View 1 (cartoon, one colour):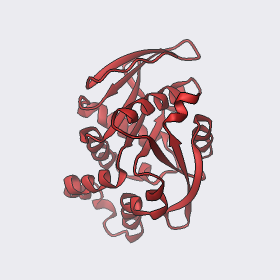
View 2: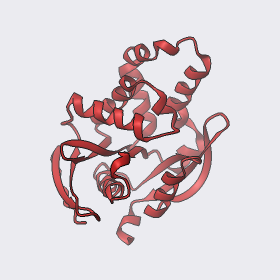
View 3: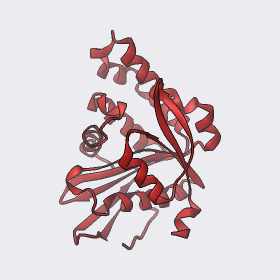
Length: 228
C-alpha cells in the first residue's frame, strides 16, 4: 500500500488492498456530514461486539463522534468503499479532556438518549465509568493520547482495511502532536488484542473500566511505525 497525506481538512486516498479491491480512504477533520457521523455510530454498534458503548443508543454514539470531529485535538478516519463507510478509527490527544468536553457540550442531549434506562442504576453506573475511566492512574501514567475506537464492517474484514486505517491514524496522531498513544481493549476481544499486538503495540498493564471487567492496556510509540 502507498499512502500520501495532506494538511487539508479532507483528502482522499486510493489504496490497493490485498484482494484487489480499490479502497477510498477518506481522512476528514471538520467536513463530516451528519449522515457520515450516523453511519460511524451505526458501524460501531454493529461491529464492536461485547463493548459496553455498543449497547448505548446510536444517537448517543453519534454525539460522541460528533464531539471527536469537532475537537481540534482529536481525529476520525473513515474507510469508504463503493460509497459506504466500511471502517473507521478514532482517537484523541487527550482522552480525559475529550470526555469532559463531551459531557459539557452534550449533557442534556446525551441524557435524552439514555431516558429509557434512567431507573437502571447498574446501566447508568457503567455509562459514568465509561466517561470517567480516563482518571484511572494507570492509564494516565502511560499517556493521555488514546485510540478511542476502531471498527471494520464484518463483510470486508481480513482484507487490509484495518491496517490501512491504523497506519493513517498513526500519521494523523503525529500531525496533532502525539508521540505515542494508549489503547484499551477488553480481554474478551481476542481478535482486537491480536491486531494491536501485530501492529506493534506493547501491553503495559491491565485496568478495570467496569468493575470485574478486565481490559488490556497497550502503548503504541509512533516511532514504531518507522521501524516496520
